[in-house]
Length: 497
Image (tube, rainbow, N blue to C red; front, top):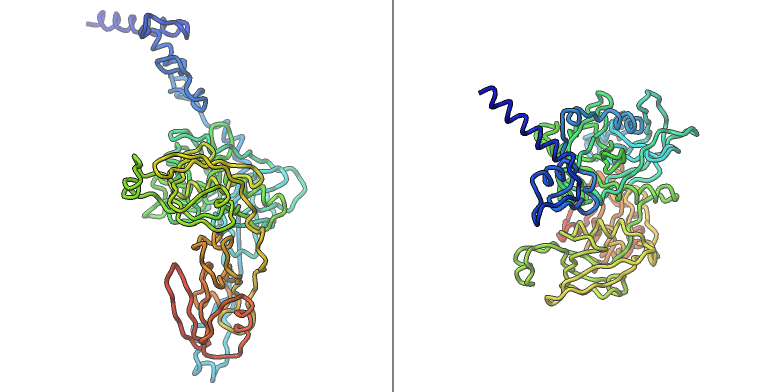
């Protein structure tokens, strides 16, 4: 029995040796020999000898004990110094629960409670030796002071160059003149499901931590953490405190900024999400050019997902693409030839699975370069070229900050038009006065006003312009009756203020 086992072992070693020494291109008849197949498998090619589409040319399964014992340590040593801890603090004014009560104010006056300091901890990534850092907006949201701690223990003050609540990204700049360790932003469009990745950050404040995993999925949408809908999903462990940290590929490049997890306990269960590096690059470029906010390009069309019923009605084999809902007049979309009812299936050669994927392609597309979309109309495919415009072009009205003692003080408003409606993800045909921002410590925030609310009526007056709203907000009144439009519904409220 032992002799038989030794004989089988010798034969197996002989076959593998022949396969390893066999020429890569040798063929035995039409299908090739067993040794050819084994040789090609070991060399990372498929059965036909092809190396794949270029993106997977250097990929193959690990072979041998020496390869299984390989380590990520050299990659971590190279990239981890560029991952930093971000400490944000803010002073919060606490509002007395009795404020506004006429009985309490009559005998005790307007009592002010002492402010308290709120702090948050997250991670960030140095993407430029000059000290430019990318992190999540929710890490530094509302912060009065932001400090950064490097991996070597040094701490620096930083300033906020740019932040975007919708994308949940922020760009910081360290106050220092030295060259800092930085890591490059990679091309996230080259990612494939199954690629190895490392997540580096500071979970739960325990210190810099590295975890490994794979890319579990691409183009994830509707995960409920921001208005952005094009995330990289990974099973690399991401926990609270990892927000803003780096998702690293095997080339040592940042291919994503870790942002959120799905969890029932607060810890990692292997479902984490990162913002793609191509989106991050667009925001960083805007910050380095001096912009205070990330300006999305103007396309002038709104889209709906293609459901199974719509796909069947249009004769599509499966429900993919973005259905054009409306097109703004004199917009890039109208000039390209788009019409309501068209289905956008690809953009610049990339498949469009849903409207969020199309939005991602539009946002990351350079404004000064021509793009191409393929649409399905009346059962036929057609290519259309377009050129995006800057969202701010053609907008005449400047945002107005409401002041005074009214309940609307602290809200920034503007006249609503198609460009602004696209930015706020409102129907393009909507008109009126819209709220752009609300100071979280203002009266407007205390009564529940939000970004995107459309002011319709105040104390019996129909609001038709930002100038009119500014005048109404200056009135000296203790009673206010107003209505706002939110998500297509009219909300009415009355209060004593």
